[in-house]
Length: 66
Image (cartoon, rainbow, N blue to C red):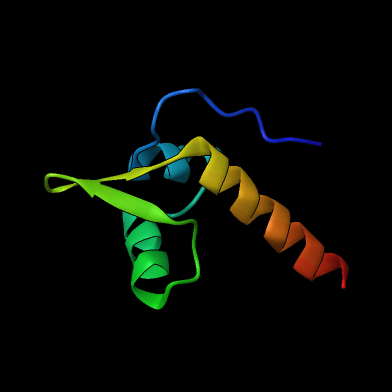
């Protein structure tokens, strides 16, 4: 089952809402620890490609199934 993602680049707030995270700080912790979806900077703003987020979700699912 695929996660319904918008076609635009996602913000950290989008990830907080999608995954019901406690705060945006969780997204930044993932980034620092390199455990979350791959992100990129646009100026000083962090953005995520929906395809990268989907790939990350899929990898997490396969790890959980193993």
